[in-house]
Image (cartoon, rainbow, N blue to C red; front, side, top):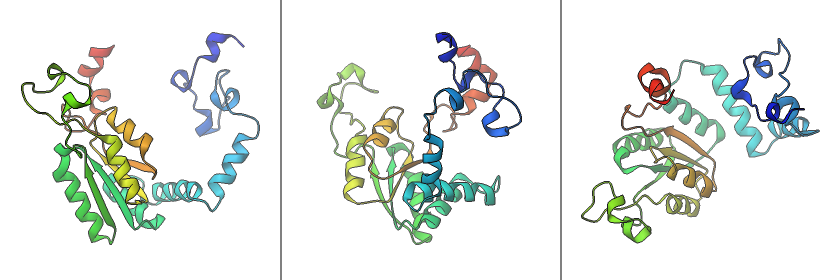
Length: 213
């Protein structure tokens, strides 16, 4: 097959036959071109099996089916924690969203779930100690603590949390947290200071789309 065709992905697909099952897969479709022999059968065994990956997949699907367009993300997160039987849940939060994170922690406690919160500035290290210059600070001329997502993850690992909830971590810092967290991670809030923490607004807005298109 042509190399340029093989570089195409779901981005170029207008069919979505993998969801609708009412058409034909495009020539470049990952379902037909990227899935290895026996891989779907192997994954089906995982999803249908008794281990955590399977239980998580089925629990998420059941919540979607039962509460579709009825529950908020906060409510769905609490339901997921309850149905999975998790007792201790980590919260990795951006310090600027600490009030929201504390509200979520109170909601967890009300539902008999134990939260353990670690803010992004844990460790209190100045940015200059972590390889940045004074000119690379938000406000130079004085101390400014850098986010420490790896330490956030390590502390929650030591607390043996069963699920970690990310609230407003910086782009990139969130990636480091996900990478180093031993427990599964779900995101409650994606930080976007410009759009009131609604990053999808830039995708809906013609103004923001014009900036990139």
